[in-house]
Amino acid sequence: MSRLRVLETWLQITLTRVREQIAVAEQCAAQKERAIPPPPPDWVIQVSIGGEGQPIAVHVGGCRSAGRRARPISRDQAMHAVTEGVEPCALCRPDTELGLL
Image 1 (cartoon, rainbow, N blue to C red):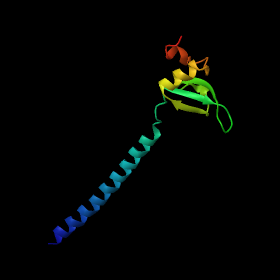
Image 2 (image 1 turned 120 degrees about the horizontal axis):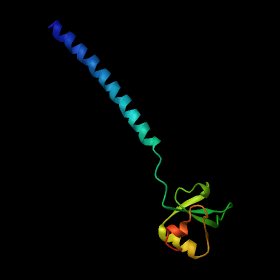
Image 3 (image 1 turned 30 degrees about the horizontal axis):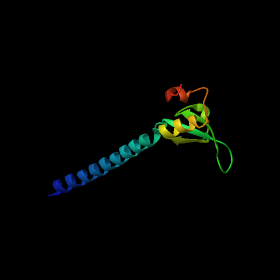
C-alpha cells in the first residue's frame, strides 16, 4: 500500500511540473503571436494636421513617407481620391499601381 502512495505522490509532482511547462509554452506562443505585426493595408491616405484632417496624399500601403497620419482606405477610395485631385505619392506611385497612369 505504501508503494502505491509513493507512486501517487510522484505522479502528482510530475503532473504539476507538466502543467507548469504547458503554461510556459502557451505564454511563449501567445507572445510570438503578438509580436507579428499585422500586414499593412493595400492603400492609405495621408491627412493634414488639425481637427478636420484634409487628405494630402494617397500612398500604397506600407509606404514609409505616409507618416503617422495615414488612414487605411479601399482601392475604390484610393482611385476616387486620386481622380478627385489628391496628390499621389511620388515615391510609391499609387496612381501607377491603380492603373491610372
